[in-house]
Length: 172
Image (cartoon, rainbow, N blue to C red; front, side, top):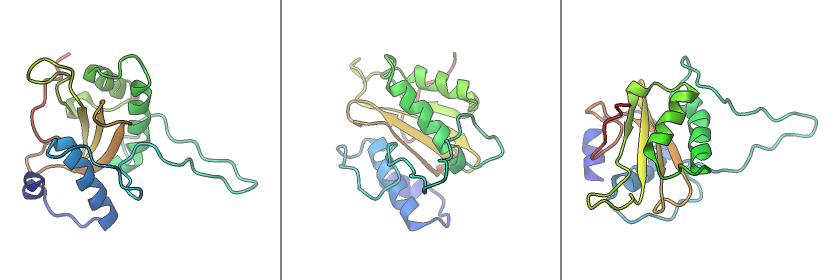
């Protein structure tokens, strides 16, 4: 957690977003056991569906990337891709998330991915992946230690990266 705080540029953000980002990054860094999700954070990928007022039609979430929009505006697309792959037989394969994000229109050259296996060859307890979007990062985390998929937007690290720790080449 100290590494996170030392390497992020201070940026004026809403307090709730900072708290949610910090909670997700603690989980992503592996510095602590998987915490119970806070009921008021925006880091959970699942949430109540927006309810429509009587006589109105709910607005569907976007299904394709909008390159002109912010990372926050593209988070529903990112989250949808993550949930689709999580629901498939490839839920433990990092490559499946990257390939699906590319298919949705995210730029592969801006992505990072952690290994699918531990240092001793066991399946990873969690896999993290990210897409850099300007000064922000769309970050996803899946795996047995995570429970349900997580996705959020956080500021880019000072080094220009999105993920803390070891990542693997995305060379396919």
